[in-house]
Image 1 (tube, rainbow over the protein chains, first blue to last red):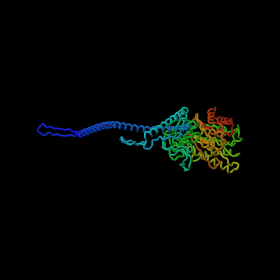
Image 2 (tube, rainbow over the protein chains, first blue to last red):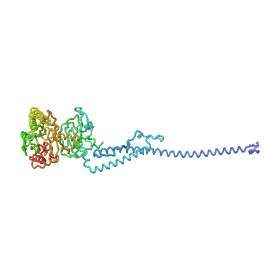
Image 3 (cartoon, one colour):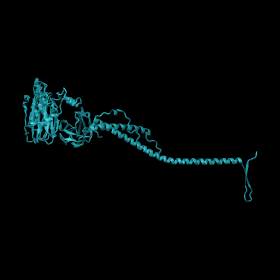
Image 4 (cartoon, rainbow over the protein chains, first blue to last red):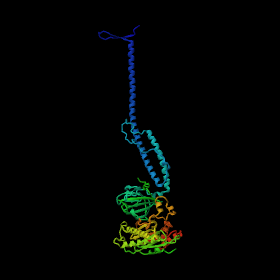
Length: 305
Length: 279
């Protein structure tokens, strides 16, 4: 079998022996294949390199975008919480208005999901992009909450529209409802059964005691006519205001009375000063609300927080 | 209209109009009072007192037995007058002028006088079996300077009439008023209640009684009206106000109110005293 081979001769210019190299053909083939493999690998590597480089630059953009989205999500969550607490306040206000108007609301009896922020959702997110989701709240849960909030808001809207329609007919009743605190101070004894401070017997306390310094201003909680201003047994100096619609308020233990029977008063008017007259153990205002002669819890009527 | 009941003889029957006499009183007072048996009863158990010298006015509505009611109300007005006069002569004269309403000793003097009346009636009832169980309501008024004081037991009433306002000063010690306060009945239902003549406190039924006292600063033109339930049950507050305001003369006010109550049926004895504070 003929040997397939090449002879490579190297002939120097000077008088040096000619060098001859005999190369097998198969060897050449091997070398050629090896070269091709190397080139192929090089091309592949460079292609991969460029791909990775491209990914890296895209990753930077994504990272920034991710951070932005994360902070947006955080602010959305905060806003939802804010809306939730606002709706809560609106609902409490709505309930008070209803107590005042004695309007019933059958829908209120339906159970509603919590609108308060759940534990953990308010933890502040750190600023690295590798942070795990800091809250247990996934966007999916947020969506659920949003749905609940929007249902609640819709119901509030209906409720308030109904109230507004009612109040349009009842402007003067609203002005007559004792809806603000008559004095600023500590409530030391609420409406209801309590131990008598003199005899320690359990007795019904027909009003609310607001402890305040001697001379502290007492304000009319709504419009009305003063029907009594004077001394009355254990009440000491007492003012009685008739607000119409069967509503009367009484203010006991006053040190000073600035209005007299027959005077008209407006909501917020300074009418008297806190004192310690009558059957009293220290300066305070004894405040009563009576509807058709029946003592009611004054808190039911106060709309202020 | 019948004559004033003989038991009221101690008090001044008919119309009385006297200016306040005491030098310390800056405001002049005029008063008028009248009592009537009404249309349904055959004797009058009410008594009243007009003492313009003390500026003390009392209406008492007696109850219990054939003779008891009139006796109890008569003892009440007599004892209160006597006790107030005695207090004035004593060393702690409550009639001395004080600047502040709450510093005045008059409410306590008035309370003491009603308590003494209670004991006097109770003692009299113990001594005479025919009078057993008698008692009376008391509504009393003392006007002193610009202050007016009330002592009150039972369902006789004191009203203040000032301009457009008529206000009941006393709170009835009656079963229906307790029911109203407890939310069991409405004031409208109370007017037609079978139990509206039941009182929860009375002077002389027991040895002691809890007396409500009130006081207020009066204004020129104020009218104080004391009456028994014979008037209050027959007329709305608004009607009383209109009658007082529209009367031609102040002296005829009691007569006009009594006539009004009699036209409505005169279910009970009717007694009215009106006292006006002049400028």
